[in-house]
Image (cartoon, rainbow, N blue to C red; front, side):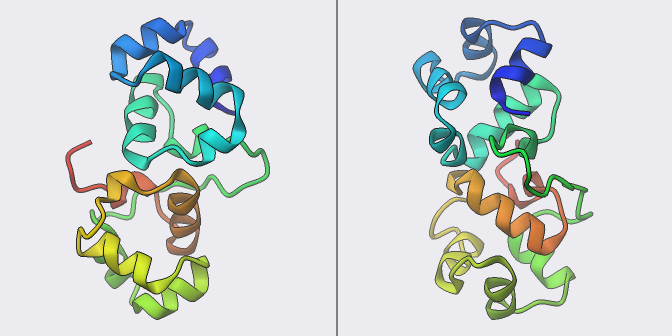
Length: 140
């Protein structure tokens, strides 16, 4: 659906969404008007927007024909979800197309999961068949 459609459905202006989420007006405008920017949105930012717009973070992904089956994994944290699915990092890398070292950095907090790009979260959540918000352990 995309950010613009979700925002308009909620009858919010960009200024109101900025005030609700703390996401800068200029950044919101870029997400609405440039698909590449929306794909590169951080997962933490997408979680804030999705909460304000009462939608799933995958609804913010600009491409129409992508997996959007974000169902709660029942556990929280990328590593815990991967282990619950009985996958190694190498296996998850093969299923998702995300490099194993990147998966390791997210699992060990070498890079916060909230700073995972939405396109990366989409690929991992598709491989793990879960909601990417479940990757977040920072309290979103």
